[in-house]
Amino acid sequence: MTSHSETRLVGTGAATGVVIGPALVIASVKAEIPQSDNPLGAFHDAIGAVQSKLADLQQQARNAGRNEAAEVLGAQAQMAADPMLIDTITAKVNGGATLEEAVTETTAEISAMFAAIDDPYIAARATDVAEVTDHLRLWLTGTTGTDLATITVPSILLAKEITAAETASLDPKLVLGFVTEAGGPTSHVAIIARSLGVAAVVGTPHVAEMVRSGETVAMDGTTGDVVIRPNPESSNEFNARRQNHLAMQQDAAQYRGQKVYVGERAVAVPANVGSRQDVELAISEGADGIGLLRTEFLFLDRNNAPSEQEQYEFYKLAASSFDATVVIRTFDIGGDKPASYIQIGNEENPFLGVRGARLYAQETTLFASQIRAILRAATHGDVALMLPMVSQLTEVRELRSQITAIASQLSAEQIAHRVPPIGVMVEVPALALVADAIAAEVDFFSIGTNDLTQYTLAADRTNGALDSLQDPLHPAVLALCKLTADAAHRHNITVSVCGLAAADPAGAAVLAALGIDKLSVSARFVNPTKSVIDALDPQTANTIGNQALAAASAEEVREILAAGAH
Ligand code: PEP
Ligand code: MG
Image (cartoon, rainbow, N blue to C red):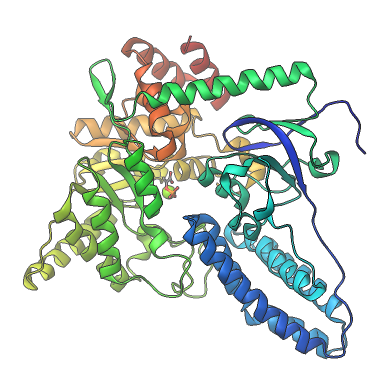
């Protein structure tokens, strides 16, 4: 199994960073549940213990500012209390199965049921069921899982899969990176790694079997390259990659708080935020305001909607933290972001379903309370209001008139408020194709390249098997961005991009070249993105813009950009 020669593997890069360091292999424990005279009693004790353990871990993650891990753990705590799980295991034991059989079969059945549902969010719940029953197993066998809180040496963690619970207690300073066998770019570990700012490579088959704890591993979270027991040449190569990566980060640091231009044209770089911690990070990175405040985090991972006051407090905090514009997006629930208390008939609510602004006709009370909170917060800063998932003009008109009516109501109640500029996200190809008509009736556009790409290429954004189709630099997506930008400028409104494409150096360059006025990126990418824009001169921008639009594929666009950069 182990040899002394190096082994090179390629997984999927899920969080940037280049590191070389000692491996810590996390074994997956699967001990058999012992027979008991009172299996149901043992089970009910165990499920109670697991529920409170998950709730404690959720709290621990939240206290440590790890909202992503907290969200996952919250969902798992709910699942541990789910009658479907509890009743199925109970029925099987009552039917004569041992607890081991009942837990194993139930996990397999519920996981298979979730995995078969043609909705990536629900399919991902299969992992949660398995993690919950792993906790049950640990409790019932009296074993403990790997406690990552006990790491003492900074290490690269390798495992089949790393659970949300395992990451809740770890000290980010002792984690150099994660390499896992399972998972895609949107898996728990990928999201958590990005929020911790450490490198991650996922989808690397058999990696945990090929290495022993203490052996050296080199990894590149951008390319997905992993080298086990690197030889001297590979070590040099990865050290050079690491120096490059660090130099890029250092170069970026000098842009903190600076304005950047392509020739005379300013390109602002605000931040995307989805939590209080994100707002703090955006302030510390010197972001040019907030280009996308994802308000969903206030609505998800809980059993009821936030009150108007709770929302107002957060929006006010965000608004008063910046001199520049803070764009608050109304709740974009549905698709991969369901809220347990919002039910659309008996339907599932997939990406092509009732998501974003389409929900507001049904959720009138929730929508009104959010608009009231935003209009009130708008008196505390340069707030703008943005509507997600709009696909036609009638929706814009309808929602605008509702906002006006809510403003009149606030006036009647003598509550201080202001109607901010109202813009829409361009995420549906149809909207980009009628951008002129829309631009005449909104105050700004913000292109959501994540959704625009999935809808243009008919490739679900959470389906790892379609990774190669999810490149926002596909010329078709760029053409829609260009149509949107030109329509915006004909109507003297601004156009931003707030999808992940803006944080990709090649994406930032081509989008700035196509005339985008603002690139909104996660806070850690604000200054690297500014350095990309600053390096772009108007002539090069013009050439790469034209060539990219004439290209036949995303690969070709990337080649044009790589050549243009030299
Ligand atoms: C997008 O679709 O690009 C976007 C920014 O919105 P979200 O990722 O929240 O759907
Ligand atoms: Mg979107």
